[in-house]
Image (tube, rainbow, N blue to C red; front, side, top):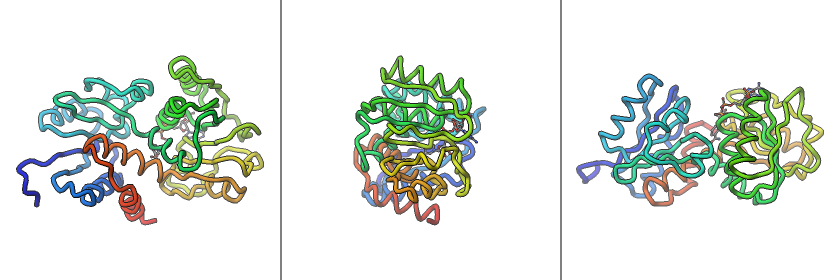
Length: 283
Ligand code: NDP
């Protein structure tokens, strides 16, 4: 038991949240950092209860929270300010209380870029991203802010794809093109990095991502956002083709590392968090 009368409380709000590994990772990280008076809770909150939940979060003085599906956009109306990345993305996955103000951040894209940096610097690189949903948006904006050379958004629905391209061109000021996803995508010879940011592969290790396998050159860096299971068809196939690969676990750990730092001001032990995640997912 903590000796202090009040605990610092942070939480995850989403629906569905059963099986979300963040609480397990955060609690292990608080313990490893000696932050005995910090607590992380997980709450199942339907959209119809988000207003009440946000009032409760303020009234009870929570230090912050993570927001996951379906609240990443809806939460913005309840906040007092946004980071540059969150404002550009129009989505928030981490809220921090600064005095009485609630400030929205987005750590998804930063978490991805941190994983990528362990393999290469994105500056000047030509990058193909499959998908144009929340994950693709966060990754593309953050890569743009990190100086990527050119980004191709390859998506099934043209409207979403074109909207993201317009955002990258006009707000992030980066060269971007839309490529409609029809059949298998042939990765251009000049591409340096391929990222699967679709939900293909979630819960299905055999799910095939629509790419021409022969266009996976060994010089290509191949990343997948899917973390459960992390050993996706794309990661396995890219490895067989000799590519360097980055699985979705690194992004998940890193976005949590960044949230931890934002709330506590301390760097957590990322290895403790990765071990906790692997233990939770029984990998
Ligand atoms: P969204 O629902 O916002 O977007 C899904 C994207 O996948 C869309 O671009 C959609 O295309 C595309 N898509 C889905 N199914 C198909 C298909 N059969 N063929 C072609 N395209 C398809 O989801 P998010 O962006 O929020 O999440 C995507 C994935 O990223 C999830 O699985 C999530 O678990 C993972 N994720 C991982 C994180 C990590 O830390 N590792 C963090 C955040 C998310 P269309 O627009 O045409 O519908």
